[in-house]
Length: 435
Image (tube, rainbow, N blue to C red):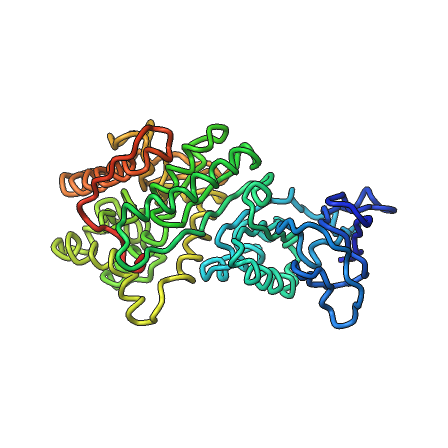
Protein backbone atom coordinates (compact mmCIF):
# COMPACT_ATOMS: atom_id res chain seq x y z
CA UNK A 1 0.00 0.00 0.00
CA UNK A 2 1.18 3.51 -0.73
CA UNK A 3 2.30 5.62 2.20
CA UNK A 4 2.81 9.36 2.33
CA UNK A 5 4.29 11.17 5.30
CA UNK A 6 2.00 13.49 7.22
CA UNK A 7 3.19 16.86 8.56
CA UNK A 8 2.06 19.21 11.31
CA UNK A 9 2.64 22.96 10.88
CA UNK A 10 5.30 24.35 13.19
CA UNK A 11 3.93 25.53 16.50
CA UNK A 12 0.81 23.38 16.36
CA UNK A 13 -0.20 20.98 19.05
CA UNK A 14 -2.48 18.49 17.37
CA UNK A 15 -3.91 18.90 13.89
CA UNK A 16 -5.36 16.53 11.31
CA UNK A 17 -2.85 15.38 8.72
CA UNK A 18 -3.55 17.06 5.33
CA UNK A 19 -5.05 14.82 2.71
CA UNK A 20 -4.40 16.71 -0.49
CA UNK A 21 -5.26 14.99 -3.77
CA UNK A 22 -7.11 11.74 -3.56
CA UNK A 23 -8.72 12.65 -0.25
CA UNK A 24 -11.79 10.60 -1.07
CA UNK A 25 -9.80 7.43 -0.91
CA UNK A 26 -7.52 8.24 1.99
CA UNK A 27 -7.94 8.02 5.71
CA UNK A 28 -5.95 10.46 7.81
CA UNK A 29 -4.41 9.99 11.19
CA UNK A 30 -3.82 12.79 13.66
CA UNK A 31 -0.21 13.75 14.17
CA UNK A 32 1.01 15.08 17.49
CA UNK A 33 3.77 17.71 17.57
CA UNK A 34 5.72 18.91 14.54
CA UNK A 35 7.98 16.80 12.36
CA UNK A 36 10.62 18.19 10.00
CA UNK A 37 12.06 15.33 8.02
CA UNK A 38 10.31 13.13 5.48
CA UNK A 39 10.92 9.61 6.73
CA UNK A 40 9.43 6.39 5.45
CA UNK A 41 9.76 4.27 8.60
CA UNK A 42 10.72 6.52 11.44
CA UNK A 43 10.95 6.04 15.17
CA UNK A 44 10.42 9.20 17.16
CA UNK A 45 12.18 9.61 20.50
CA UNK A 46 9.77 11.23 22.94
CA UNK A 47 12.59 12.85 24.92
CA UNK A 48 14.50 14.75 22.24
CA UNK A 49 12.10 14.45 19.26
CA UNK A 50 14.97 13.55 16.94
CA UNK A 51 14.23 11.25 14.03
CA UNK A 52 16.27 8.08 14.55
CA UNK A 53 16.65 6.69 11.06
CA UNK A 54 20.40 7.07 10.59
CA UNK A 55 20.14 9.89 8.04
CA UNK A 56 17.88 12.63 9.36
CA UNK A 57 19.71 15.45 11.11
CA UNK A 58 16.97 17.94 11.91
CA UNK A 59 15.52 18.08 15.41
CA UNK A 60 11.92 19.14 15.83
CA UNK A 61 11.11 22.31 17.70
CA UNK A 62 10.65 21.95 21.42
CA UNK A 63 7.08 21.24 22.50
CA UNK A 64 5.48 20.22 25.78
CA UNK A 65 5.62 16.44 26.25
CA UNK A 66 2.15 14.97 25.98
CA UNK A 67 3.27 11.35 26.33
CA UNK A 68 0.39 10.27 24.11
CA UNK A 69 1.22 10.14 20.44
CA UNK A 70 0.96 8.23 17.23
CA UNK A 71 4.10 6.21 16.69
CA UNK A 72 6.56 6.27 13.79
CA UNK A 73 5.20 4.91 10.54
CA UNK A 74 1.70 4.86 12.05
CA UNK A 75 1.70 8.66 11.88
CA UNK A 76 1.61 8.40 8.09
CA UNK A 77 -1.50 8.55 5.92
CA UNK A 78 -2.79 5.19 4.80
CA UNK A 79 -3.50 5.29 1.07
CA UNK A 80 -5.99 2.61 0.08
CA UNK A 81 -5.61 1.64 -3.55
CA UNK A 82 -8.69 1.16 -5.71
CA UNK A 83 -8.46 -2.62 -5.62
CA UNK A 84 -8.37 -2.55 -1.81
CA UNK A 85 -11.57 -0.53 -1.63
CA UNK A 86 -13.50 -3.28 -3.35
CA UNK A 87 -12.63 -5.82 -0.67
CA UNK A 88 -14.73 -6.32 2.45
CA UNK A 89 -12.69 -4.05 4.71
CA UNK A 90 -14.54 -3.11 7.86
CA UNK A 91 -14.60 -0.02 10.02
CA UNK A 92 -11.45 0.38 12.13
CA UNK A 93 -11.66 -1.21 15.59
CA UNK A 94 -9.91 0.77 18.33
CA UNK A 95 -8.32 -1.42 21.01
CA UNK A 96 -6.77 -0.07 24.20
CA UNK A 97 -4.34 -2.24 26.16
CA UNK A 98 -3.09 -1.27 29.62
CA UNK A 99 0.12 -2.76 30.95
CA UNK A 100 1.17 -2.75 27.31
CA UNK A 101 4.90 -3.06 28.06
CA UNK A 102 4.43 -6.23 30.14
CA UNK A 103 5.04 -9.87 29.30
CA UNK A 104 1.39 -10.77 28.67
CA UNK A 105 0.98 -7.86 26.28
CA UNK A 106 4.22 -8.79 24.53
CA UNK A 107 2.50 -11.97 23.39
CA UNK A 108 -0.99 -10.53 22.97
CA UNK A 109 -0.34 -7.45 20.84
CA UNK A 110 1.10 -9.40 17.93
CA UNK A 111 -1.85 -11.77 17.92
CA UNK A 112 -4.19 -8.78 17.74
CA UNK A 113 -2.17 -7.16 14.96
CA UNK A 114 -2.00 -10.36 12.88
CA UNK A 115 -5.76 -10.63 12.45
CA UNK A 116 -5.98 -13.80 14.55
CA UNK A 117 -8.52 -12.25 16.92
CA UNK A 118 -10.87 -10.03 14.93
CA UNK A 119 -10.40 -11.58 11.49
CA UNK A 120 -8.32 -11.14 8.35
CA UNK A 121 -10.63 -8.44 6.99
CA UNK A 122 -10.67 -6.28 10.14
CA UNK A 123 -8.20 -3.36 10.40
CA UNK A 124 -7.37 -2.29 13.94
CA UNK A 125 -5.77 0.55 15.88
CA UNK A 126 -3.79 -0.23 19.04
CA UNK A 127 -3.76 2.34 21.83
CA UNK A 128 -1.11 1.35 24.36
CA UNK A 129 -1.23 2.57 27.97
CA UNK A 130 1.87 2.53 30.13
CA UNK A 131 3.41 4.55 32.93
CA UNK A 132 6.28 7.02 33.30
CA UNK A 133 8.50 4.17 34.40
CA UNK A 134 7.55 1.88 31.51
CA UNK A 135 7.35 4.50 28.76
CA UNK A 136 10.71 3.69 27.19
CA UNK A 137 9.78 -0.01 27.09
CA UNK A 138 6.45 1.01 25.57
CA UNK A 139 8.35 2.73 22.75
CA UNK A 140 10.26 -0.51 22.22
CA UNK A 141 7.00 -2.46 21.91
CA UNK A 142 5.73 0.07 19.37
CA UNK A 143 8.98 -0.24 17.40
CA UNK A 144 8.54 -4.01 17.16
CA UNK A 145 4.97 -3.58 15.96
CA UNK A 146 6.23 -1.03 13.43
CA UNK A 147 8.89 -3.41 12.12
CA UNK A 148 6.43 -6.30 11.80
CA UNK A 149 4.56 -4.67 8.88
CA UNK A 150 1.14 -6.03 9.77
CA UNK A 151 -1.22 -4.87 7.01
CA UNK A 152 -4.24 -4.84 9.35
CA UNK A 153 -2.51 -2.70 11.97
CA UNK A 154 -3.37 0.81 10.80
CA UNK A 155 -2.58 2.88 13.88
CA UNK A 156 -0.48 2.60 17.03
CA UNK A 157 -0.40 5.25 19.73
CA UNK A 158 1.30 5.18 23.12
CA UNK A 159 0.62 7.18 26.25
CA UNK A 160 0.40 7.31 30.03
CA UNK A 161 -2.89 9.18 30.45
CA UNK A 162 -5.97 6.92 30.24
CA UNK A 163 -8.15 9.90 29.33
CA UNK A 164 -6.11 10.25 26.12
CA UNK A 165 -5.40 6.58 25.40
CA UNK A 166 -9.02 5.45 25.90
CA UNK A 167 -10.47 8.04 23.51
CA UNK A 168 -13.19 6.35 21.39
CA UNK A 169 -11.95 2.81 22.10
CA UNK A 170 -14.19 -0.13 21.21
CA UNK A 171 -12.30 -2.65 23.35
CA UNK A 172 -10.33 -2.05 26.55
CA UNK A 173 -8.05 -4.87 27.69
CA UNK A 174 -7.00 -3.93 31.21
CA UNK A 175 -3.93 -6.02 31.95
CA UNK A 176 -1.77 -3.66 33.98
CA UNK A 177 -1.94 -4.05 37.76
CA UNK A 178 0.41 -4.01 40.71
CA UNK A 179 1.73 -7.48 41.56
CA UNK A 180 1.40 -8.74 45.08
CA UNK A 181 4.58 -8.07 47.04
CA UNK A 182 6.14 -10.09 49.88
CA UNK A 183 3.98 -9.98 52.98
CA UNK A 184 1.20 -8.04 51.25
CA UNK A 185 -2.28 -8.93 52.43
CA UNK A 186 -4.97 -9.65 49.86
CA UNK A 187 -6.98 -6.73 51.29
CA UNK A 188 -4.09 -4.35 50.61
CA UNK A 189 -3.81 -5.58 47.03
CA UNK A 190 -7.54 -5.05 46.57
CA UNK A 191 -7.20 -1.45 47.70
CA UNK A 192 -4.08 -0.61 45.67
CA UNK A 193 -5.26 -2.17 42.42
CA UNK A 194 -8.80 -1.05 43.07
CA UNK A 195 -7.64 2.56 42.89
CA UNK A 196 -6.11 1.85 39.47
CA UNK A 197 -9.30 0.34 38.10
CA UNK A 198 -11.51 3.03 39.61
CA UNK A 199 -9.45 5.67 37.80
CA UNK A 200 -9.46 3.73 34.54
CA UNK A 201 -13.22 3.23 34.84
CA UNK A 202 -13.71 6.97 35.17
CA UNK A 203 -11.57 7.53 32.08
CA UNK A 204 -13.54 4.97 30.07
CA UNK A 205 -16.77 6.58 31.20
CA UNK A 206 -15.55 9.97 30.01
CA UNK A 207 -14.01 9.24 26.62
CA UNK A 208 -14.54 5.63 25.41
CA UNK A 209 -17.19 4.40 23.00
CA UNK A 210 -20.55 4.08 24.75
CA UNK A 211 -20.56 0.39 23.82
CA UNK A 212 -16.93 -0.37 24.71
CA UNK A 213 -16.25 -3.95 25.78
CA UNK A 214 -13.95 -4.16 28.81
CA UNK A 215 -11.92 -7.25 29.74
CA UNK A 216 -10.17 -7.04 33.14
CA UNK A 217 -7.08 -9.23 33.50
CA UNK A 218 -5.22 -7.50 36.36
CA UNK A 219 -5.84 -9.27 39.64
CA UNK A 220 -7.94 -9.67 41.68
CA UNK A 221 -9.79 -9.48 38.37
CA UNK A 222 -13.38 -10.15 39.48
CA UNK A 223 -13.49 -7.36 42.03
CA UNK A 224 -11.35 -5.06 39.87
CA UNK A 225 -13.96 -5.51 37.13
CA UNK A 226 -16.72 -4.65 39.62
CA UNK A 227 -14.86 -1.49 40.68
CA UNK A 228 -14.32 -0.50 37.06
CA UNK A 229 -17.97 -0.94 36.07
CA UNK A 230 -19.19 0.92 39.16
CA UNK A 231 -17.20 3.93 37.97
CA UNK A 232 -18.68 3.87 34.46
CA UNK A 233 -22.37 4.79 34.76
CA UNK A 234 -22.53 5.67 31.04
CA UNK A 235 -21.46 2.18 29.91
CA UNK A 236 -23.66 -0.93 30.34
CA UNK A 237 -22.55 -3.16 33.22
CA UNK A 238 -23.03 -6.12 30.88
CA UNK A 239 -20.04 -4.93 28.85
CA UNK A 240 -17.53 -5.80 31.59
CA UNK A 241 -15.69 -9.12 31.87
CA UNK A 242 -13.16 -10.63 34.25
CA UNK A 243 -10.79 -13.12 32.65
CA UNK A 244 -11.39 -16.71 33.78
CA UNK A 245 -10.72 -18.28 30.39
CA UNK A 246 -7.22 -19.46 31.34
CA UNK A 247 -8.79 -21.43 34.20
CA UNK A 248 -11.26 -22.96 31.73
CA UNK A 249 -8.48 -23.87 29.32
CA UNK A 250 -6.50 -25.52 32.11
CA UNK A 251 -9.57 -27.48 33.20
CA UNK A 252 -10.18 -28.69 29.64
CA UNK A 253 -6.59 -29.85 29.40
CA UNK A 254 -6.82 -31.90 32.62
CA UNK A 255 -10.07 -33.56 31.55
CA UNK A 256 -8.56 -34.41 28.17
CA UNK A 257 -5.48 -35.92 29.82
CA UNK A 258 -7.54 -38.04 32.17
CA UNK A 259 -9.88 -39.24 29.41
CA UNK A 260 -7.07 -39.91 26.93
CA UNK A 261 -8.48 -37.62 24.24
CA UNK A 262 -7.29 -34.48 22.54
CA UNK A 263 -8.60 -31.31 24.17
CA UNK A 264 -10.68 -30.26 21.16
CA UNK A 265 -13.08 -33.03 22.19
CA UNK A 266 -13.79 -31.31 25.53
CA UNK A 267 -16.54 -28.68 25.74
CA UNK A 268 -18.95 -26.97 28.14
CA UNK A 269 -16.37 -26.67 30.91
CA UNK A 270 -17.51 -23.85 33.20
CA UNK A 271 -15.43 -22.00 35.74
CA UNK A 272 -17.85 -20.68 38.36
CA UNK A 273 -17.04 -17.85 40.74
CA UNK A 274 -13.89 -15.98 41.62
CA UNK A 275 -10.47 -16.14 40.00
CA UNK A 276 -8.98 -17.55 43.19
CA UNK A 277 -8.64 -20.89 44.93
CA UNK A 278 -12.39 -20.79 45.57
CA UNK A 279 -13.05 -21.09 41.83
CA UNK A 280 -15.23 -24.04 40.84
CA UNK A 281 -14.22 -26.03 37.73
CA UNK A 282 -17.51 -27.67 36.73
CA UNK A 283 -17.23 -31.30 35.60
CA UNK A 284 -20.96 -31.97 36.07
CA UNK A 285 -21.94 -30.10 32.90
CA UNK A 286 -18.72 -30.69 30.95
CA UNK A 287 -18.74 -32.95 27.89
CA UNK A 288 -16.30 -35.12 26.00
CA UNK A 289 -17.23 -35.54 22.34
CA UNK A 290 -20.81 -34.58 23.24
CA UNK A 291 -21.15 -37.04 26.15
CA UNK A 292 -21.20 -36.08 29.84
CA UNK A 293 -17.72 -36.20 31.38
CA UNK A 294 -18.97 -38.39 34.24
CA UNK A 295 -19.92 -41.08 31.71
CA UNK A 296 -16.37 -41.17 30.39
CA UNK A 297 -14.42 -40.45 33.59
CA UNK A 298 -16.04 -42.55 36.30
CA UNK A 299 -13.41 -41.80 38.93
CA UNK A 300 -15.55 -39.53 41.13
CA UNK A 301 -12.80 -39.04 43.71
CA UNK A 302 -10.46 -37.69 41.02
CA UNK A 303 -13.11 -35.34 39.67
CA UNK A 304 -14.08 -33.97 43.08
CA UNK A 305 -10.59 -33.62 44.54
CA UNK A 306 -7.54 -33.92 42.30
CA UNK A 307 -9.11 -32.30 39.23
CA UNK A 308 -10.03 -29.08 41.04
CA UNK A 309 -6.73 -28.83 42.92
CA UNK A 310 -4.72 -29.45 39.76
CA UNK A 311 -6.50 -26.63 37.93
CA UNK A 312 -6.03 -24.25 40.86
CA UNK A 313 -2.33 -25.05 41.32
CA UNK A 314 -1.36 -25.21 37.65
CA UNK A 315 0.11 -21.72 37.71
CA UNK A 316 2.28 -22.52 40.73
CA UNK A 317 3.65 -25.66 39.10
CA UNK A 318 4.46 -23.65 35.98
CA UNK A 319 6.44 -21.15 38.07
CA UNK A 320 8.41 -23.96 39.71
CA UNK A 321 9.28 -25.42 36.32
CA UNK A 322 10.00 -22.22 34.43
CA UNK A 323 10.77 -19.62 37.04
CA UNK A 324 8.07 -17.18 35.94
CA UNK A 325 4.31 -16.88 35.90
CA UNK A 326 2.22 -17.65 32.84
CA UNK A 327 2.28 -14.98 30.15
CA UNK A 328 1.91 -16.68 26.76
CA UNK A 329 -0.97 -18.91 27.90
CA UNK A 330 -2.65 -15.91 29.53
CA UNK A 331 -2.39 -14.03 26.24
CA UNK A 332 -3.90 -17.02 24.41
CA UNK A 333 -6.77 -17.10 26.90
CA UNK A 334 -7.43 -13.38 26.31
CA UNK A 335 -7.59 -14.13 22.58
CA UNK A 336 -9.98 -17.02 23.27
CA UNK A 337 -12.16 -14.80 25.49
CA UNK A 338 -12.48 -12.11 22.81
CA UNK A 339 -13.07 -14.59 20.00
CA UNK A 340 -15.85 -16.19 22.02
CA UNK A 341 -17.63 -12.82 21.98
CA UNK A 342 -17.05 -11.97 18.31
CA UNK A 343 -17.71 -15.48 16.96
CA UNK A 344 -21.07 -17.29 17.29
CA UNK A 345 -20.95 -19.99 19.98
CA UNK A 346 -21.41 -23.48 18.52
CA UNK A 347 -24.88 -24.91 19.10
CA UNK A 348 -25.24 -26.44 22.55
CA UNK A 349 -21.89 -25.15 23.85
CA UNK A 350 -20.84 -22.26 26.09
CA UNK A 351 -17.75 -20.55 27.49
CA UNK A 352 -16.70 -19.10 30.84
CA UNK A 353 -16.29 -15.42 31.63
CA UNK A 354 -16.67 -13.31 34.74
CA UNK A 355 -19.73 -11.07 34.29
CA UNK A 356 -22.13 -8.95 36.32
CA UNK A 357 -24.58 -11.14 38.23
CA UNK A 358 -27.60 -8.87 38.48
CA UNK A 359 -30.53 -10.69 36.84
CA UNK A 360 -28.79 -14.09 36.65
CA UNK A 361 -31.03 -17.20 36.58
CA UNK A 362 -28.95 -19.34 38.97
CA UNK A 363 -29.69 -17.74 42.33
CA UNK A 364 -26.19 -16.32 42.71
CA UNK A 365 -26.02 -13.10 44.72
CA UNK A 366 -26.53 -9.97 42.64
CA UNK A 367 -24.18 -7.00 42.17
CA UNK A 368 -20.88 -8.89 41.96
CA UNK A 369 -18.75 -10.11 39.05
CA UNK A 370 -18.89 -13.90 38.94
CA UNK A 371 -17.66 -16.37 36.33
CA UNK A 372 -20.61 -18.14 34.69
CA UNK A 373 -21.43 -20.05 31.47
CA UNK A 374 -22.21 -17.74 28.53
CA UNK A 375 -23.11 -17.88 24.85
CA UNK A 376 -22.69 -15.27 22.14
CA UNK A 377 -24.18 -14.58 18.72
CA UNK A 378 -20.82 -13.15 17.68
CA UNK A 379 -21.84 -9.51 18.09
CA UNK A 380 -19.69 -8.83 21.16
CA UNK A 381 -22.64 -9.39 23.48
CA UNK A 382 -23.57 -12.54 25.42
CA UNK A 383 -26.38 -14.31 27.19
CA UNK A 384 -26.17 -16.64 30.17
CA UNK A 385 -26.66 -20.35 29.48
CA UNK A 386 -29.80 -21.66 31.15
CA UNK A 387 -29.61 -25.36 30.28
CA UNK A 388 -27.15 -26.19 33.06
CA UNK A 389 -27.45 -28.84 35.76
CA UNK A 390 -26.75 -28.21 39.43
CA UNK A 391 -26.15 -30.66 42.27
CA UNK A 392 -25.36 -30.19 45.97
CA UNK A 393 -21.60 -30.66 45.47
CA UNK A 394 -21.45 -27.95 42.80
CA UNK A 395 -23.81 -25.53 44.55
CA UNK A 396 -21.97 -25.76 47.89
CA UNK A 397 -18.72 -24.72 46.23
CA UNK A 398 -20.38 -21.97 44.20
CA UNK A 399 -21.76 -20.46 47.42
CA UNK A 400 -18.26 -20.47 48.97
CA UNK A 401 -16.86 -18.50 46.03
CA UNK A 402 -19.88 -16.18 46.18
CA UNK A 403 -19.22 -15.48 49.88
CA UNK A 404 -15.63 -14.57 49.09
CA UNK A 405 -16.66 -12.10 46.38
CA UNK A 406 -19.24 -10.51 48.67
CA UNK A 407 -16.50 -10.05 51.27
CA UNK A 408 -14.17 -8.53 48.67
CA UNK A 409 -16.96 -6.17 47.65
CA UNK A 410 -17.14 -4.85 51.22
CA UNK A 411 -13.37 -4.27 51.13
CA UNK A 412 -13.70 -1.87 48.19
CA UNK A 413 -16.95 -0.12 49.09
CA UNK A 414 -15.05 3.21 49.16
CA UNK A 415 -14.16 2.67 45.49
CA UNK A 416 -17.62 1.67 44.29
CA UNK A 417 -19.55 4.52 45.91
CA UNK A 418 -21.14 2.30 48.55
CA UNK A 419 -19.80 3.89 51.74
CA UNK A 420 -16.93 2.98 54.01
CA UNK A 421 -14.90 -0.15 53.39
CA UNK A 422 -14.96 -3.03 55.84
CA UNK A 423 -12.51 -5.80 55.12
CA UNK A 424 -12.62 -9.25 56.69
CA UNK A 425 -10.90 -11.82 54.51
CA UNK A 426 -9.74 -14.60 56.85
CA UNK A 427 -8.38 -16.87 54.12
CA UNK A 428 -5.59 -16.20 51.64
CA UNK A 429 -7.09 -17.43 48.38
CA UNK A 430 -4.71 -15.90 45.88
CA UNK A 431 -3.93 -18.27 43.06
CA UNK A 432 -0.33 -19.53 42.74
CA UNK A 433 1.61 -17.12 40.57
CA UNK A 434 -0.09 -13.99 41.85
CA UNK A 435 2.43 -13.50 44.67
